[in-house]
Length: 146
Length: 131
Image (cartoon, rainbow over all chains, first blue to last red; front, side, top):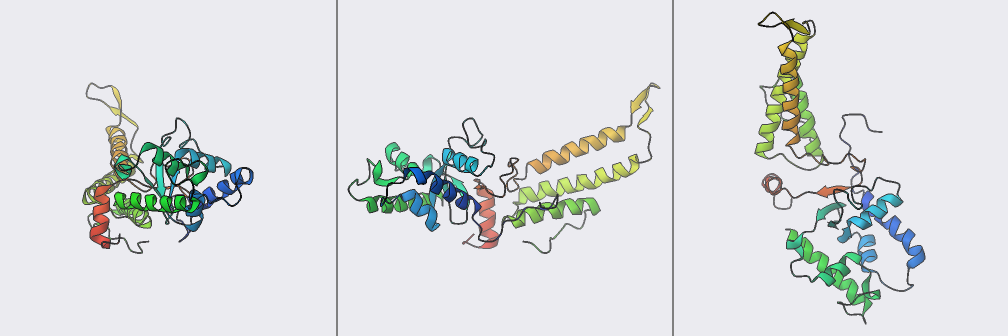
């Protein structure tokens, strides 16, 4: 427990949020994983790259870790929002300006990050193309954020 | 982290302590204050000095004093002290400290990069284009 009045400081290079998301993803996929299928969200998450996370996914991961998730859950201050989680473990809110070129369906698939198992807009015959498309889209969002 | 914090010389002991604490928190978050935020912080620190002086005066002062009509009234210093604290709180609240909104214990996990174009500009000025 840090001394009161002392600013809490994070260990350099630590990625507690990403770690928490990975733990929850692995737990969930114990039941749902399709063997051999590449999940774009998982690949970006575990490689430390930019990854899109919505409030629902954050709430689930926080709840799984026993943390307060109200802020991101239904009715919470950050409910319904979508962020880009960077390599530095910070969240940057994605707003309409950042995804102006994306259709709603493509954006929904980006948020889901499940790849071709449910992809309609991306090339359903090429799972790796979905992973590459995911990386390209997150990179484009990062550029749009400036 | 800022090892040494440059504190304005016109501040007293309590103002300096407040100023130093806020600047360190901001520096720990790899941020810098905008010029407006620096002004607000300086104001809050000055008021903190005044509040400390009042608190010292109130230490031995009566809580109730005689009013203009001879009635008992609360010592105006207490009202002034309370008003100063309110003003300090309001002024500090205008400074967007990292995770100021986090009261749910998630501040060690969740770091949200809130849009703050002025701060981004200041970061670029002071830390170079890579900031």
